[in-house]
Length: 316
Image (cartoon, rainbow, N blue to C red):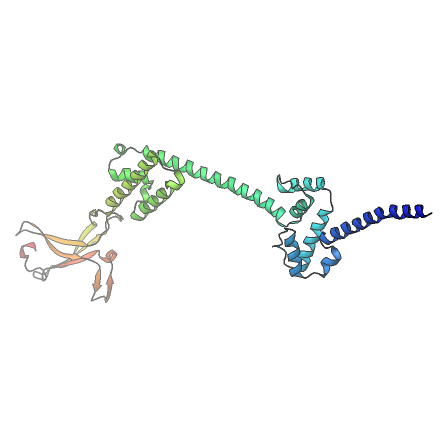
């Protein structure tokens, strides 16, 4: 009996030790296991953020406590799934991302950045393709412009200015300084090295554009003599000797931006001198009689008076 009792006691000791070790392992596991739903509900926002941070979960987008709780619940839900299933979900969502542990998979799937990261990657890829397409299009347009400029032969035009207008692409009806400057800026922007690159052809085209601009501006800045007044006629206002007066009337020359009328010169042929002598110069000015400014368009007549031109007796 004694031996059987001793055997029974000795046989029970190993089982007690095993039970104690299991209990200790279970306690350690519970201690290291993340808090469950009950404890999660009692945590503050600060504690929830700290808890999520310990697990490596980004909670930047979660502001309210309910958002943090939902994020934690999602993480715990993923942790309860098999590794193979989680890895398949990660591959489907992350574009090739396959974590090797349950925690890593759960962290990736629970993170609010996972779906948006994929969307951003796709979006950035699309944006990059569109940007490359735009760059290619700009380069092709610039190269087409370079080829056009290099093929404009100077000898095919009557003057250097005509060649310059063709290089800049300024139409015949709108050839003024502003149009030349607009065309020049547009071409230089299109032929910028950042858009078309550096090459001998591009460098030569840029030089030709600058030369064309200078030639056009010099051509436009040169003063051209306007045409003759039109429909010149005279009317006798007084035929009394010593008081003779004649009114001269005319129409302005055809309008031209390159040859504007700035003044009229009234001259008369004096037989005593054998040549035309200037009688007066009409310019826009303040008129004392009218008490207002007289514009260039209003200067279409002048009265020749014998009393005012006594030094030219043979004229009359």
